[in-house]
Length: 182
Image (cartoon, rainbow, N blue to C red; front, side):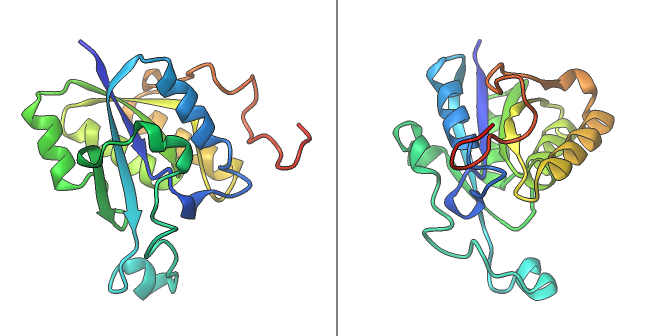
C-alpha cells in the first residue's frame, strides 16, 4: 500500500526568501516515487473572505498567485488539485476523496507550516487519518521562527513522532539564502 502525498499550497503567491526552496525539494521528493497518489491544495483568497475583510490582505486572489509552482507542473493532474478558500483546512472534495479510499495515512508537505500545513495536518488527525509531516519539505512565508512555531504546535497536537525529516534539507533548518550564500 502506498501513502498519498499531500502538497499544501506550494503556489506562486507564497514563494519568497523563506520558501523559495520548497518547490524544488517537493519535486525531488516526488521523483523518489515513494508516495502515491500526489494530491495538491491551492489557497484562493476570496474578496469576501476573512483575510480581505479582517486583515485587509488581498493577495492570492487570482492567477498567477494562485498558480501552483511550475517546478511541480509535471506531476500535477487537475483532478488531484483541491482549491480551498481561506484557512479552511481540507476542502470537502479532498475529505471525500480520502474517506472514499479509506486512507489511513497521508504524508504532508508545503507552505505555510504555521498556518495551512498545520490546519490540514490537524484536520487529517481529527478525521482519524495519520498525518506524517515531512518537516524539511515545509516552510513558512513569515520565516524560520514561524516554521518552528508551527512544528511546535503540531508536535503537541498530533505527536512528535509524526514530524519526520525526508532527508532533503541538507542538514539545515533555515531556507538556503537567495542569490548564493549558505
